Length: 80
Image 1 (tube, rainbow, N blue to C red):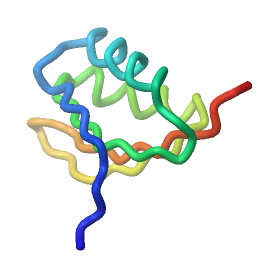
Image 2 (image 1 turned 180 degrees about the vertical axis):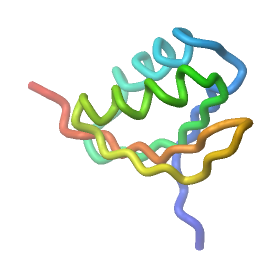
Image 3 (image 1 turned 60 degrees about the horizontal axis):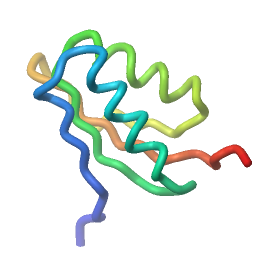
């Protein structure tokens, strides 16, 4: 059985819209929650994984091509 992750497809948007939408999603996320994230914009594909790591989230690259990047994000503990 395949794992079930919430999905957020940000491929239609160019920077900075993907980061804004991701930040909005993270506001409602809880620690340990998983998200399958897809990015199309070249700047976002480079910047968003680095930003997530700086924020302390766990990030795994699932698939990468010229057309886009698929990530698995596991949300870190949110500060109190």
